[in-house]
Image (cartoon, rainbow, N blue to C red; front, side):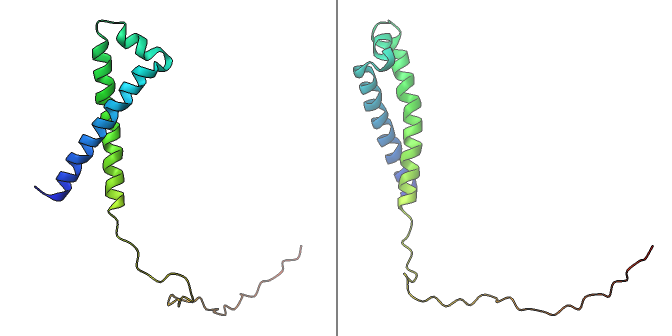
Length: 105
């Protein structure tokens, strides 16, 4: 299995684990009465499952994005000091102005 696929699967598993913990804390702390609504209803498990799934999608995407960005290579260019610029330097080019006539009325 390619390394990127394994990285994605690990990110999804971590994201859904974080989402499950997040929803458990959300219910335990009864944030804005969500815990009371979920635990007080016979269909509350559906709401909890939806919270885990949708938060898992978000957290998995964030986890995968962070892991991919952390894979970037370090810049090994010069750090500070005098830098030599080899770009084009603008030069002045004389442009004669056209003679203008004054119109009298």
